Length: 96
Image (cartoon, rainbow, N blue to C red; front, side, top):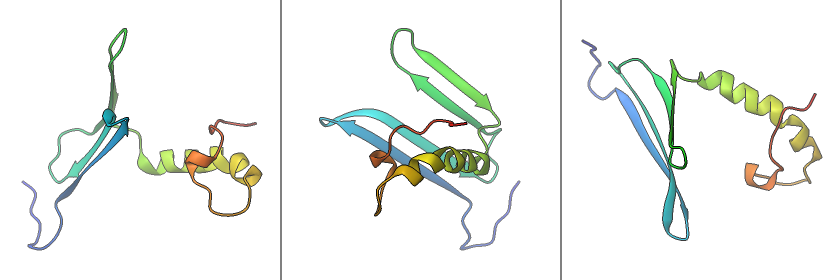
């Protein structure tokens, strides 16, 4: 049993949805809370064939963040001056 003091957060649930022409095409869900069962990342793709991919233990957030920062460096250096979002950059890939 997990105990927390009153007024403290015990977890979080976030949902992101992506739409095109008012049709929901992607849903991202994130849950983290005290007492949660074994963590995992899951991807479900509807198509031919349908796919379900489970990464036991999940992808560590700090490692994933560091990877995208390092792999984005060349694209960011090549970008024009000013505020640029990931949408504005070419697809990020590893460049040796």
